[in-house]
Length: 397
Image (cartoon, rainbow, N blue to C red; front, side, top):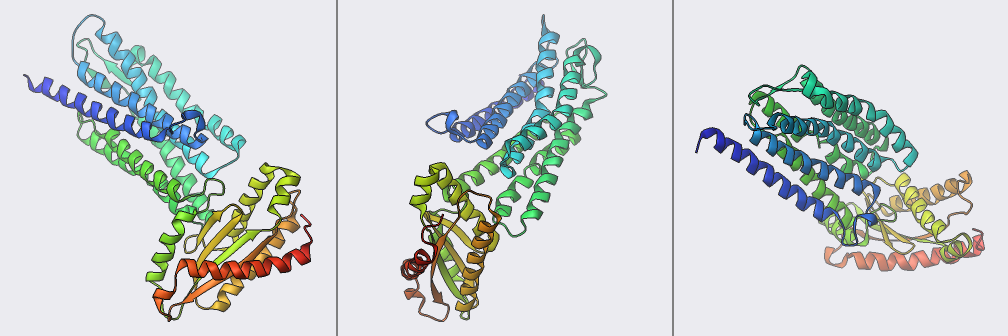
């Protein structure tokens, strides 16, 4: 068996491995009840994986038939290369859409951005389709050997322009969020293009070696793992942490709690939530829960504190502060933020909630300081606060 054939089979094997692993990621990304039930963001992610599978298949085919001679080879090779080079920037284009769905909830804004980003993709598509005749992106000689065209690097540039735009968009958004917990989630998205860039440089320097899309697959794997982790510990309705994450956060903070610090559990319960649902409908109720999450995000440092939905209309914030007085100040800021939200009048209803807290000191016996004990104390204090609030507000939602 010739060295050339062995090399061709090696690249085909790499492509097959890429297809298999990408297909597994795609299968894991689709829930049991089908793709219709997944979010807009997840649909884009699945579309990217489908795009990558197509590229792996085309990459394997083109490497294998390069230099072969049989009837119709140039036409087959030309068609494969047209799709291959057209799909390269599509990956970056879809990645841009994915990033936009991650940081924007306004569908009109996303659609507007898609129309703007379409232009380089369309131009590249036209160049690819005409390349069998013009040789702009690629050429195939009489012997069936592929070579790069004079505008080959335009194709590469379009792909990485999309990645650069996505990184800039993420960095601007992260800066606007400042201490928001979502910054941690967005950081791994900003690093997505690093592996493909390394692969592209290697492929350029070592012409004839195809590694760039294996590197892309590595980036997708990192994204998938992080997305799965976030989904495990994130409340879908509010975007806050869920009840499962509380114990992990609490134990982590308790282990590192200094003697002069306190750890506090602030329990928040929406007042008149049933009345709000009955009056304005369950859609408004869901909206009110998201409003509470918004208020919490405005008040607390979401990198240092744990903001979670405890269940139903209850929320828990775990914080470490210097003293009990600091916890009381945070609660005062929280109630002030609620009042400010109601003054703005963005909703037809008003948000009211009752708050209680429990705390443990760093100089206490740590075995006595548990999450359950803090929450029990917080629950008692919260109901005392609720009694006062009900007398004051008289169900005026």
